[in-house]
Image (tube, rainbow, N blue to C red):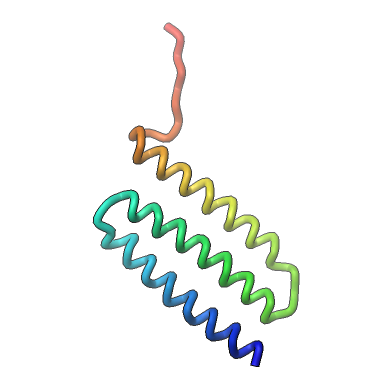
Length: 94
């Protein structure tokens, strides 16, 4: 019974990822696309966690941490690019 519920959760997470991919492709604005990418990252983390529970192992926790860090850095980078037009600032003294 518990495994069935976890498989149903994985199905709904995959549907949610597909909806997020649609929003990334057809998003009306750039901030909508960034939010969709962030949502996809969170759904992937949840999917890996459920998969880890299904396999009864703790080996995937490092992967969850890595995906979370990359998702956070990507969201911050895209947000900074939307705000200023560039990501890395060069301060030059002339």
